[in-house]
Length: 82
Image 1 (cartoon, rainbow, N blue to C red):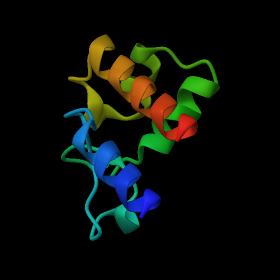
Image 2 (cartoon, rainbow, N blue to C red):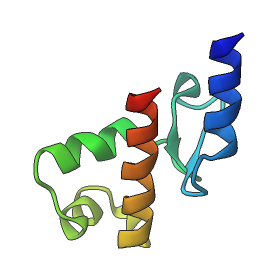
Image 3 (cartoon, rainbow, N blue to C red):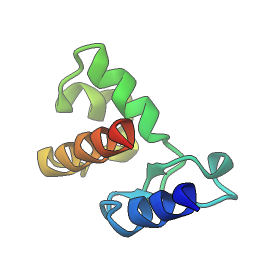
């Protein structure tokens, strides 16, 4: 029951840049309209990549903004806290 409530909470407050779909990457959170897992972005940030480096590494994210990256990091923090 608690797991279901947490899942509903997380989906309700998921930033628009992130989506989940059981048919895409096994349902793990991905960047909207791509197959790029959020975990990949987090790994790049963990390797000290800057936004311009991420865009260079993943050209399909050329329109990603600092705000989008901030939303991804905030979402991750809520997942770790849950």
